[in-house]
Image (cartoon, rainbow, N blue to C red; front, side):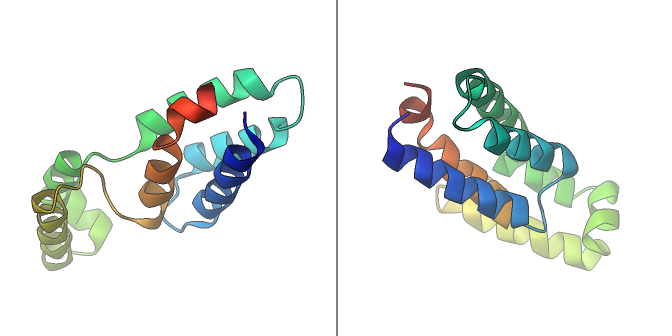
Length: 120
């Protein structure tokens, strides 16, 4: 991987790890990838990391559905708060956004935008 791309992905990965919205599985995958950088496991770890990120990013329609559910109300602190999340997500979708814009998903989206260069 090109040094400039590698540095960018490392930076975004560190942002991902620090994001309060990053779940434990995604954080573990990010940490494992960082540990593999510069080793003979880097290429294989990179493929796994990208696959994990693709599976972990929250599509905007899924966020809307979740925020409008009872489970979403429980996670977001009540029906009113969840409705606010759903409204925010609908605005993102109307503006052309495809994914949740929480700090974790935003970092993942930035990494995945470089997928072709990362895997080259």
